[in-house]
Amino acid sequence: MRFEKTIGCIGAGYVGGSTMAVLAYKCPHYKVIAADMDEAKIQKWNSNDPPFYEPGLKEIVNEVRGKNLFFTHDIPSMIRESQIIFVSVNTPIKEYGIGAGMAADLRYWEKCARDILLYANEDKIVVEKSTVPVRTAQAIAHILSSSQNHRFQVISNPEFLAEGTAIDDLLSPDRVLIGSEETPEGIAAREEIVKIYAHWVPREKIVTSNVWSSELSKLASNAFLAQRISSVNALTPLCEITGANIDEVSMAVGMDSRIGGKFLKASVGFGGSCFRKDILNLAYICKSYGLEEVAEYWLGILKINELQKERFVQRMLRAMFNTLVEKKIAIFGFAFKARTDDTRDSPAITVVKRLLEEKASISITDPKALENAKKDLKGITGAIHFTLDPYEAAQHADAIAVITEWDLYKELNYKKIFEIMRKPAFIFDGRNILDHEALYNIGFNVYPLGKKELVHFKEYP
Ligand code: NAD
Ligand code: UGA
Image 1 (spheres, rainbow, N blue to C red):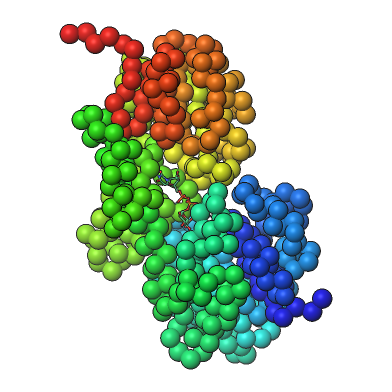
Image 2 (cartoon, rainbow, N blue to C red):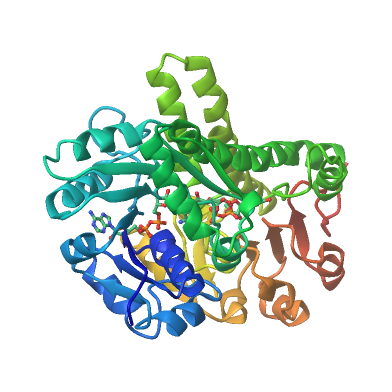
């Protein structure tokens, strides 16, 4: 079959792989090539199971792979063949030198720019899909403009998908943002990218802007989302002390249409590969322009998030008579959120490490994330057991800590679980997903987040 054009992507991870799959699915007349330097990952893409779990992804990939979607390790060939090249490589926190622990490490991105420069055989449009610091496009354009033979336009097109709902987010995005240099060539290149999305996204949802607004909007969006969670989480201790109920407060606040109800769910802390990294990056950029107070404002979101995880552990410790030695704790959920196997920066990692420091023995259950959990906890000393079966995890346990909001934890037989646990039995619901009253009536001592605990202990005067 002759294709209208070829679109390539460097980086076939969560974003690159999922985005290219949906693009190929929606644009059968384009050839789409996702390339990655990780050969094992490419092999997985070319098997029947993608390299990670994402609802709906496997079905889409299986439908288009080999027709107009191709996965390859051969980056030079992909670069030569593609007229438009998305770059969706990881941009982790820098771990060395200036900016260590805060700035984005752009070495993977720069390597891509240099590969494009090296292998390109004609003019190309290069699309920043990775989340990058504002003004990265300029650095990339400087590298690419050293070409004697070809001209490159750098477009910013940040991705807003969330894991667990990535396919729906890609099929029906709230908006698609496309930024470019505001020159005739920049605007023409931007229109090429608009044309791609216009195959399935309503035109009014495709927003164009200058390239710096586009880059900064991505960091700002993640900071705003995380800020809402930290705002709610910051209210949970106050609720526990005063008798207010965080779910009722969130609902009342969110019903104001100026505020809105989404992302106001209290939790043991937010996780995932991006919120912490992107806020650190935003704060680093502010600091680098001398905006210390602004940087501190954004960093406050992260301080509350760390405090929330620590508060969860301290509440467990206090409730269980100030010692966890020889106590078994079942961890329900290790993924950073439900419907994914991703554990990057999951609050479960911090909670488990802290409980092990208190010499508790840990039994972790999760329907999808156990393999990643094992990697995250490799080399950590202490008693850790992994099981797919929540009942096995709870056997002889003193406490259950719900860390991930998997639906299956709502549907378990808690009467049976209560019977197989050591007494007194505790539940710490770090997601407020369980029926706390019913658990209390079964006999559990229940500690929801941001709500009064329900305990069977008598208060002594
Ligand atoms: P990922 O780690 O899953 O994937 C990145 C891939 O890039 C890896 O497979 C890696 O092997 C590959 N890679 C790195 N350097 C390469 C090179 N020079 N040549 C070829 N391949 C290379 O990361 P991700 O979660 O897909 O995130 C990618 C970017 O998208 C990041 O900037 C992230 O902040 C952003 N983002 C992520 C999400 C998300 O939900 N994960 C959502 C929106 C935006
Ligand atoms: C987030 C953003 O939602 C995406 O728009 C963005 O593209 C992506 O980061 C990124 O740049 O990587 P993601 O991290 O996949 O997506 O998942 P979210 O649904 O945002 O959840 C992040 C964390 O916040 C999870 O740990 C989740 O459990 C927690 N959360 C979310 C809460 O604690 N309360 C809420 O009300 C919502």
